[in-house]
Length: 97
Image 1: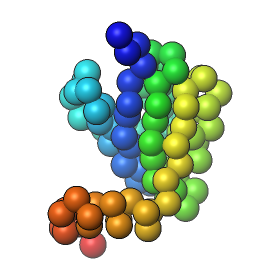
Image 2: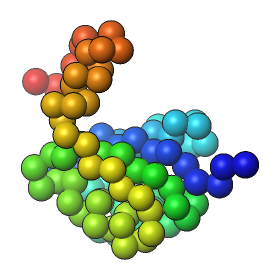
Image 3: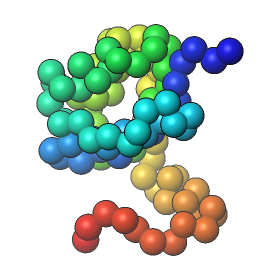
Image 4: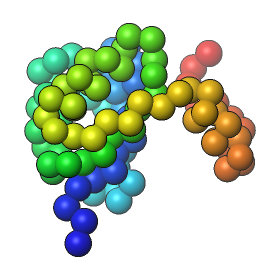
């Protein structure tokens, strides 16, 4: 049985929105600050895999904290994720313009 989680993170300046592929927890927003991110990361099982888009500098704190906690971090190129979403038939951008 799988003991780690696969987590996707949408990173923004003020908050990150996290979702679990296995729906082990509801989609939630976490303040993009050291203490809040660290508390959330400590709630994940060891060895969980976290995928997040490269977003200028806003992803760096989460990526560094997750790596320090022993989580596997996948930093994704935004162009690649756009092409993937397009291939899957997701044409609408959900972020505010």
